[in-house]
Length: 226
Image (cartoon, rainbow, N blue to C red; front, side, top):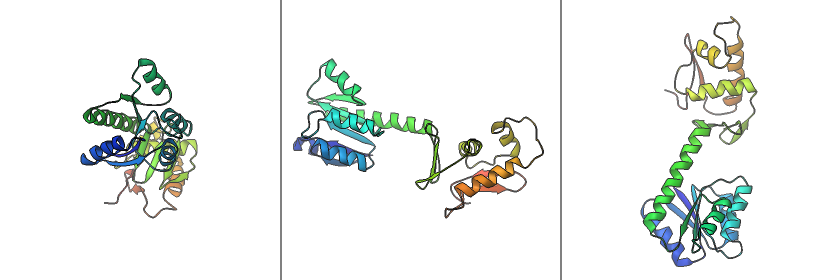
């Protein structure tokens, strides 16, 4: 896990960084709110540890600005302010957890691990991935190797089904029932046409094709060739 520590107290920041590195995590440090916001906005982190009282921009402002930018990296707030109202204010600003100083490193690590597990579950629930092909089920955005792919509604539904059944042979009957809602074969080439259009969008401009036709059986979407 890669973590950004936004903390102006050098000894505290170094203490946290050393502890995280000892258990195998990567950790960067920002000593003020402005630098922390810039690093969190431009780099990819799995978690943020944010001191509430920071020079140049306070921790809650950093988090609320990130949330306004649609950056949902989980944030653990550190603060000497431990009253209920203070914790509520931190959570309302977009923080995901709140730890009062002084703290035990074991508790900080446990809270980070819990945030990471929760985030992974949320990502798995809303994102499908096959190799470098990604589908966001909430925004309905499809990307391959960071290139956005524009799909028509039926193409999106077809690709979603294929991704949900990646590395499995999907038959025409399965597609008719689950993508077209047919319980009979209309004896048309509708599937072939849509598969051809989909293949041209997700494979044609890329080095390695993902979608294959299995002669006499159906289709398979897989990240690697066998």
